[in-house]
Length: 178
Image (cartoon, rainbow, N blue to C red):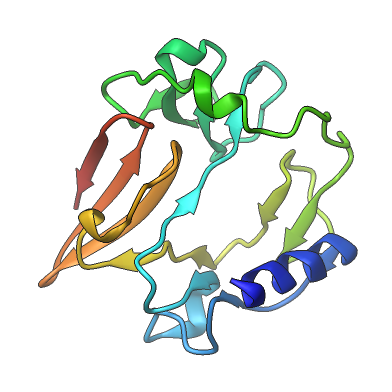
């Protein structure tokens, strides 16, 4: 945990980074690193927690993924296609109690960490900017290995080669297989 916190502190003081970033260890999960911009450790059974957004009206960057808490009693994980918000949760969840533990202070609207380029016109706190590299989500054999997932948790499950995107809205998991 200290390593992850240290990486985030480093990123907070650096406005841009070039190259690949691996969170959690020096190995990651991708066997071929040529198309990877950001990835996570190959162990730990943890997911990526999306930001809780209570007003998504200013989000205009295609590819943005959030926990839409604009109506906390019916929150959903969504991504922005560039023209509309697509639902990844299927069913809504009440995240009202989770919003109470979020910091009360508003973020600096100009705060941004860009990985993969010197800057980016995309709005977001963490922007992965690349024309030919991707983020590899945390991978676990089963979503059930994640103990007490927070609303907005996103993970890739790999159960014997059967891979599924799993997103947690605070009440239930939704699954997207490929």
